[in-house]
Image (cartoon, rainbow, N blue to C red; front, top):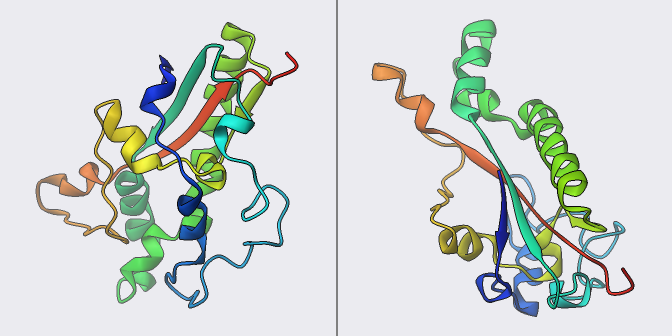
Length: 171
């Protein structure tokens, strides 16, 4: 989905970049890329220093049904039944989701003649949870989500890949 948005809908502040240091599954010190990988905080400018807020801005997001993907993993890998977290392993589903999102980013760039797409807005201080809420989508953060086969409830398990598009200052 590609939507033109007003700058006021993009909540951002430096503290968001520090979320990368929060502990998560098998990463007690946060993301191992923090301060090391190009494009990662803390040495990234805030989003208003990357995209020109005086020109059109776009949110580009792709909904990916991770529950449907996990169900295929559950069926194809019965040996994983004691470790359902494997059905939702991001290393398995993210390439497919990123490919879909990349197609949407290319479409947005072409249709709107964008000069810059920011694939990791949180690296530039954007509160993606609030941004999505501002456009009417509430993100769920429990991971992995509960995989309920009854009534195909797992189909409610979706993730969103989110980018911002616009124009560089010299464009």
